[in-house]
Amino acid sequence: MEEKLFWIGILVGVHLFFSHHFSEKGRFKSEEFARVWHAVFIAIVGFAGMLLLMVSLDNRKGEVVTAVLFSRKQVIYGLLAGLAGGLWAYFRFGAKKSASARTQAENKPAHKDGKPAAAHLAALPPGIKEDMEWSETIFSAVVLASVVMYLFVQAFKIPSGSMRSTFLEGDHLFVNKFIYGFRIPYTHKKVLDFKKINRGDIVIFQFPSFDPDEEQCGGRQYGKDFIKRVIGLPGETVELKDGAVFINGVKLADESYTQYLDPGRYPRPHSSRIPPVDYQLFWENRMLAKMVSELVRDNFGPVTVPKGHYMVMGDNRDRSCDSRYWGPVPAYLIKGRAWFIYWPLSRMGLPQ
Image (cartoon, rainbow, N blue to C red; front, side, top):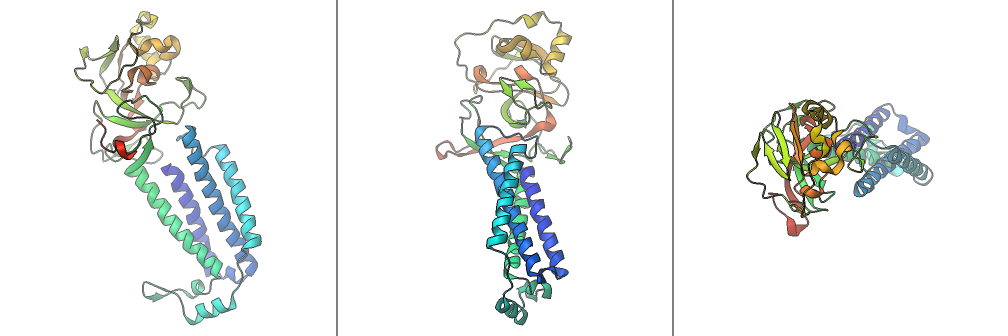
C-alpha cells in the first residue's frame, strides 16, 4: 500500500507543480483554461480516490497483489471515475472569474509566514486557489504517510487461520518495519539493520514467487503478504519427524505456541526415496509439495536453509501453508516483524 500511496502523492504533486507554473505564466487569466485545469484536478482526485477504494475492496477479498502497483481492473475503474469527475467539474463547477474576489485579492494580498504572497497567487481565481491548497495538503499528507509506512510502521490484517492461536482471523496489528533495516526501494538491499532475524520471530513477508501464474497451496499466491514464524535460520538443517521440528538434528525444546488440530500424523512420503541433492533442489524451487502434496506436513526434510533465506511455519501446524510446501523465504522479501494487535480491543497487546 505504501508504494501505491507514494505514486498517488507524486501524481498530485505534479498537478501542484504545474499549477504554480501556469500561475506564474498568467495562464489562469483565461477563464476557459482555469475551468479546464479545475476539471483536471477533480479528475485526478476521482482517479486516485477510486484506485484506493478498489485496493481496499480487493484487500478485503484477499485479491491484493503487492508485487504489482495497480491491477488493470483498478486502473480502469480509476480512469472511469476520473473521467466522470472531470466532466462533472467542467460543466458544473467551472472556474469563473470573480471581480469582487479578484479586487479584494489585489487590494489585500494573501500573507504567508508574515510576508505578502506573490502577486500571481493573490490574483488566482478562487476555484484554482482552493485546488492548489488541496493539492498541497494531499501531496504532503500522502507522501508522508507512504514514507512512514514504507520505513517504519504498517498496519496488517490477519487473512487466515494459519497462525492460530497467536493471531486470529481478522486481527489487526502493526508491523515494525525498521527493526530489520530499511530496504532501498526497488532493490534487494537493506541498510541500518537494527536487529537480526531470529528463530521465533513472527514476520510479515511477500510470498516468494516470481511467476504470477504459479499456483501453491490451492491458488495463486504471487505478490501476496504472508505472516509466519521463523523456524530455520540460514545454514541450518531442518527436519520434521511426526510433526516435531529438528534443527541440526536436535529437537526444538519449546514450541508452546504451536497448535495441532488433527489427532493423527501423515506417514513419511515416498519423497524420502529422492536423493538428498534432488530433494533440496525441489524444495528450494517450490516443487516439493507438487510431488508429495500434504504428506510433507508431518515428515519433511532434511533440508538446508540457503544463505540469505529463512524457513517459516505457521503456529497452526496442521492448517498452515508454509515453507514446508513452497520453500524458503529470501531475507529481502521480509518486510518486518509483528509488533502488537490494536484491534479488536479485547485482544490488544503484544504477540507471544
